Image (cartoon, rainbow, N blue to C red; front, side, top):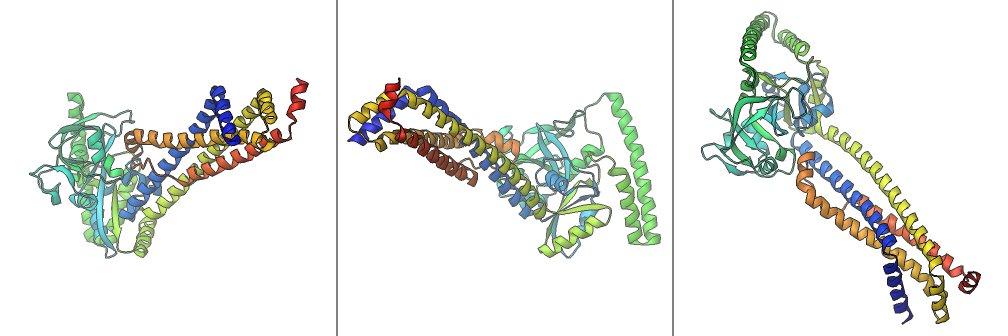
Length: 464
């Protein structure tokens, strides 16, 4: 009976200190909502990174490109490519007996911030899990074959966000939305297929054929004044003539001096003129990287070493690079968690101080309980229950509320971060936060109980 009375007293005390109790619960809840966000976003990034790295063990790009640039500009579409390679280079890789498949890519432009990447039909076949919708006149196995140079394949979530459907048309913008010199091309893309969700960066991308990339950037398909267009056409013609002259020159050298010497001079020429401007998009006959599937990890390591040390290309083992990126993410998660735990500790101290302050206001109430025959321990238990109630309420409300907010903002977070967020996945950082909060709450509650237990309530009231 006396414990029921104590419980009613606790509820009565909480109801009379609504503002301080609400503030304490809100502070704990906010910290736990932040922990939920950190955990889920980190898990989503890590899962996406691992899945993408497994698909293509090796990425080869132009000389000077860092490992992270190669991975981020190809698998995640979040960085600019570091230059270009000749398309024929992909054929050279494909002929290597250690390679099972190659997928040349040419980073093109963007549409509403969504990257447009030039690929071949084989790449779509490799990543596709089927199509939500597809033009019935298009061969799903050779989606960029024939005369489908204007065909665009849209990632599931990009299509949803911008309400793109089969047979819709759109124009791409040169570069990315952050480029100051971005302009709209007059090349019209036609949506010919919508991919089913892949739960990766591909859901937030647009794919077109390599031919369309070369056509756009090889013939100046962008809006300019008429005079500028004529000047560019003249310059382009002059540049093409020079390019053909160089090609004939290299062919002659190849016949005279042999394959290896000609290859060395050709790559040296391209390295000198192309790598100086790392932000250039693929022009005609150029690609920005090659995604490579090898027959085993030993071959991956050997190929990476060969194509990183030849002076003309860069290569990276995507698995190792992704693990390195994940280690950085883990450090960032740990740092954010550290500050969150610190915030929780400060909040718990605040709650403790608030409860101690309220003790002075409740001396008469507790003295009355003592005169009614309720012992020191049950009276002290009131303080423990109050702090425990505030701690648990903050944990529950913050955790549930945090995950509900993540679910609400999932579409925007997925699109901006290029991941597939799992809003109701509970991570270690949250579980540790719960344990730390409960342990801190219990210790502080026991400290408050000790103060009450040692207090002589009759003397304290007499002093007043």
